[in-house]
Every structure is written in C-alpha cells, then in structure tokens.
Image (cartoon, rainbow, N blue to C red; front, side, top):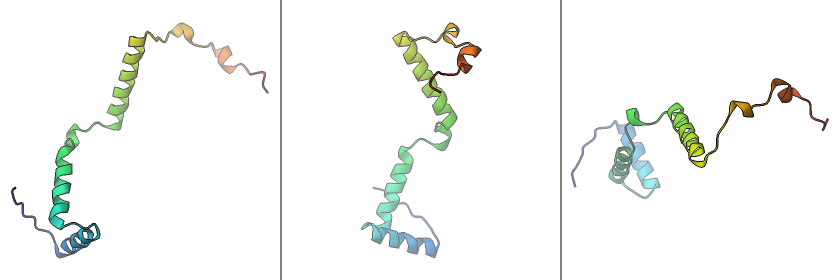
Length: 90
C-alpha cells in the first residue's frame, strides 16, 4: 500500500476529523474510499449527458421495435378531423 500526503487548511482538517468520528472511521479511510469511488466512475469528459442518454435510449427502443416487427407508419396517423373530433362522453 502506498501513502499519499495531502495538505489542507486547519478548518478542513478539523471538519474531516469530526466527520470521521461521527461515522466511526478515520480521515485516511474516508479519503481512501473517496479516491476509490472517484476512480471507479468514468472521467467527466466520458460521462453521458442527459441528451446523449435520451438519444441512446430512443435508439435502443427503436431497435427493439424493429426486432419485434413493430412499425410506425404515416398511414396509421389520425387525420386532423379525427384528432379534434369531440368524444360522445361530454
């Protein structure tokens, strides 16, 4: 195991010691867990944006529709009159 030294201001050190005591651990253990978690997630530049995620999910759904033979055709659309036709339930 390697040692990493980090310099922080006095207040940060004090708050870190308090938090460690509250959680029953040490500052070193907290930093080890934080660093491990940070390195397990992809770098910020590689993370998928919400827009990219939605686009990917839409493409996955479209591909699933194709595999299942589910299609959407322009002929399936309602006419303008059908869309605005009032229901008899009023």
